[in-house]
Length: 178
Image (cartoon, rainbow, N blue to C red; front, side, top):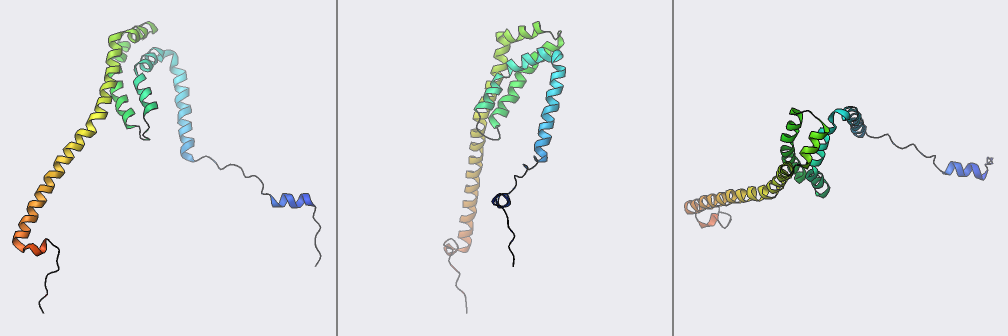
């Protein structure tokens, strides 16, 4: 058999695999990036008209932004609770801005109003309070329900023991009659 002569460079190329192109991005990440792009374009086009509202929302929703940064839970439950009540505190001032002329001056008047900021941030604080107290309250309710259920089951167990005898409680095998 005759051997084919190959140069060292040819062998080196054959030994190394050609670099593969990176795999295409998953469809879900493409959808997400497409949505973000559309959202950015729409906001950029509407910015001249919605700037006063954006100022009120950004200043009013600062506690939500802080909660998003601080919350380490992947589901961001505390941030969601704070955000919903924080937005409830911001919404009346947005309506007030919209009912007047939506001008930069009116937006800045709302933002520097101490009472308005107290309402917005107080609502966020109330959201934090709800997040911290409701789970403990619900846990205590479930504890009471569980204890009541245990008491009912023990009473049923006592009645069964009275009817069937102590051997049923010790889980002994009943004697088989031959």
